[in-house]
Figure (spheres, one colour):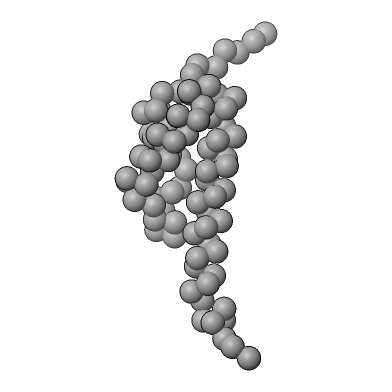
Amino acid sequence: MEIPLETWTEEEIRNWLFNFSGLTAPKIGLSAPEIEAMAKSIFAASDGVPGIVYPELKQQLNHVLQSKFDCDRSKSPTSQLSL
């Protein structure tokens, strides 16, 4: 039995990012315009095709998290110690 997957609209991607991705959590703290730009980018790269939306979401979320936590590490007191 096949289960058809509907294409996602840009609005659906945006809603998912706002409601389920955790990007608005204080520790990550992306702004609404940043999340809207991400939704626009994901939709543009995928045309809403689920098999393309998923890896694009994953790639962009990984990029945001990596850059956010790399930035936080560079600000920590232990990373600024010089010997």
